[in-house]
Length: 298
Image (spheres, rainbow, N blue to C red):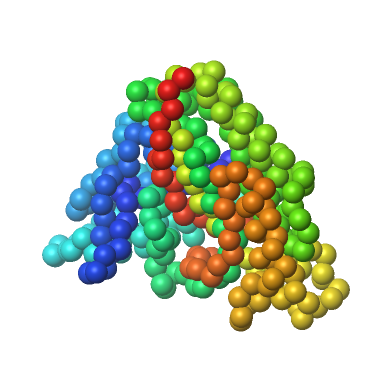
């Protein structure tokens, strides 16, 4: 199955007057998207058009779509435009998530929190994996077509990262009261990162290291199916995972703490935050942040 990302063409910031937009996508961010996802949707609008680096080449490949939001006549503030772009991003996610052949995720870059329109979202419990300084991405001097060739050649290593993160999510749910050190999913994740580093160094002399935050929406159904508690009933859930009314349990907190302590550069937490109302088959609802953290020269 292919993986797609629905990204904004600019960064959203919250200030005293509400939401506004700031810097546009950098060439490094575009290279990050094209390496780790198969398709990309970046909404645009007819008031302030936000172009993206290498747009012409990427649109020509069919890997990038630029649907345009049309504003009618009138006066619009930056808050209005930011709100409308966020709404369009969520609407696109609802529409494209019906495609059974692609797992589509929402992505917002360099944000301190994730923004979703209140009319299309609801409060949910999440497991959050924060990966610091782990994902190698070539710098802007590398031609975008070379990036795409590298992705095709190294698709197994690049795609394995998503699979490893999915496995860690399942590991946390299936063994919330056990130490996760030495678990197969954790070892696979470490090996995946090492493999990505190795193949990047073989091909590119200069590359960036990116942070990424991944959030999985939790539900009682997730916990029942993954921990094998179906015959115990919902009353058993708080002891093994999320208590929907009072927060997360001690055993879940212990598990995520053990995981974070074992894997360098990984922070794991459980929290309550916004998620799209529209259900999907993929528990990974969105990626909340990817920020450039450094440049490495080989």
